[in-house]
Amino acid sequence: MDRFHLLSHDAGECYYQMGELAKALEHYNSAVRLYSQFSDWFLRVQFPATLRPAGRGAYRQVTWGASTRGATLGYFSDSTLMGQGKLDNQTPFGKAASYRCRAGAGPGARDRALHGVGDPAPVGVDGRGRLLRSLTMEVLNKLSARPGPPNHWSEAWIDVQLGLAMVAAGRDQQATLLLQRGVVAAGQYDHPLTPTALLSLGFLALRQARIRGHEVLRRSDVCRRELQSMDIVEEAFYYGTVTHLVTNRKGMYPPLAPAIPWCKSRASRRILAGLCLMAAENAAAIDRRPTPPGC
Image 1 (cartoon, rainbow, N blue to C red):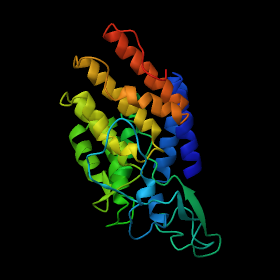
Image 2 (image 1 turned 135 degrees about the vertical axis):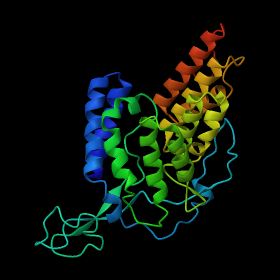
Image 3 (image 1 turned 180 degrees about the horizontal axis):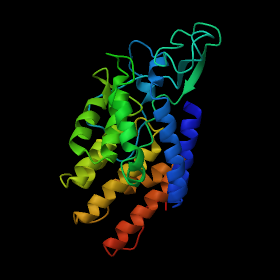
């Protein structure tokens, strides 16, 4: 399920970025239906009982600011085991769906490496969320059932995913509470969905007209340390630049200038192109020739 779910979501993301919204919607819907059909999959994942800090080697230095949140980056393996199959050959597939294979026992059952466990359900905070509203209630109902191990740190991931669905449904107050609760796991550790939760909180505050541009980026600053989430970096800069412009702030959006050469030095071409475009639009808005370094 995980492989096909992620392939469908990634295909939808590609079409979305290309402006092919009809094709994007088709793939997003496919991903959401798969997620909904197998919404109890968290119960079959062999999560570690406790978390530990990631260590100083996991932190990456950036050029446009320092985190002020004070949270600890947790260690999360790139893959984990998940039971798949049936408890025994006599058990129909539709029965005992929430507990089969948890120990990998019985004929036909096996454990498989599961990659991308922390990836969110494909319900975005912007246009993607609006595209998916036809399936939002189905996702809300599935996630509201809390389909995961009870009293476990992985509930933070369910909170974030449910919060994203609430954003897409326009339930901002409920979304805010869930996302705030899911920002850290086990009460102290930043996790793979932390950047998504922080960006979504910033987006909600922006939508409610109670946030300034630089605060959107600050809310997502954990992605400065978890640079696998470069798409979150780009979106944080986008919303930061937009709010910088609409609130009539003077000059260039401050984090752009140091971020552009940083992205260029790491061959992040797509992100670099996005940041250069934002800088050019910002420069045009203030009637100044766009001269951001690295573009």
